Amino acid sequence: MRSHEYDLQFRDRAARIRTWGLILLSLAGLLWIWCAVLLVTPYEADTSRGNDYRSPAHCESRLFTDRGTANHGIQEGNYCANERDWPEALAVLGLSVPLSAAGMGLFTAGSVSRRMSAHGQAMRELDKFAEAGDSLDGELPT
Image (cartoon, rainbow, N blue to C red; front, side):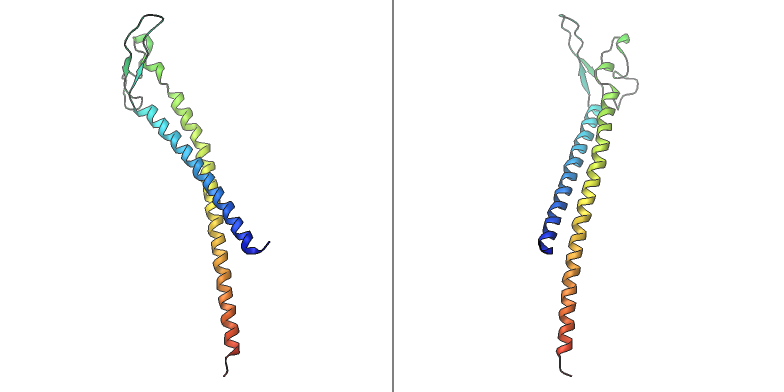
């Protein structure tokens, strides 16, 4: 295999690694958005027990409430506290951490590999020009 073919394959592998890093970073971003939606948006809680129908309770967002509907329990007659709980949002946030770390590692490795390959190619081209210039200088009459 010639060095140019190997270099092209190396760059293709680096591009695939970088693409996988972007995919993992995108998934982590979606998990961050999901966590934000869970914490910021108002929601409704089901208040019906058994066969009787009641209208759903309107609940404030988890993040922007201070002792509001989202933080009082059923013992006070409010169903909002159990509908969206903090562990769910924190689990989504916790799942995004390894995805973003792996994605950033893959993206960085792919980008650096590709840049180093391009740098090596540029150095080889400069060496060719320098060698061609040296051989021409030696053949000129004095």
